[in-house]
Image (cartoon, rainbow, N blue to C red):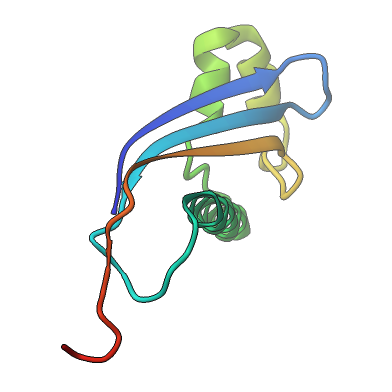
Length: 120
C-alpha cells in the first residue's frame, strides 16, 4: 500500500524548451509477503515500478496534449512570464523529453509478515 505522496516539481528555467525535475516521496507498507525478500530489494523494486508508471502515464498524456501532472502550473507559480512564453507557442509545450530527472523515494513503514507457503 502506497500512501502520503509528497511531490516536488522544479522547472529548469535555463533550458529551451523548459524541462522539469520531479521528486516523489511516498510511504509504503505491505501486509504480508508471499516469499522472502529483503527490505532493500522491496524498496528498489517499488521505486522502479512507481517511476515506470509515472513515465508511462506522462507519455499517454502527451499523446492527447494533456499536462496530467500540472507541470505547467508549477512553472506558472514560479515564473508566470516564462510560462506565458511557453504557452504562446503553436505546439503543445510538453514533449516526451520534458521530464529531465525523476527521483522516487520509498520509505518502508511496514514490511509485513511472511505468509506460510504450505497452507498451514
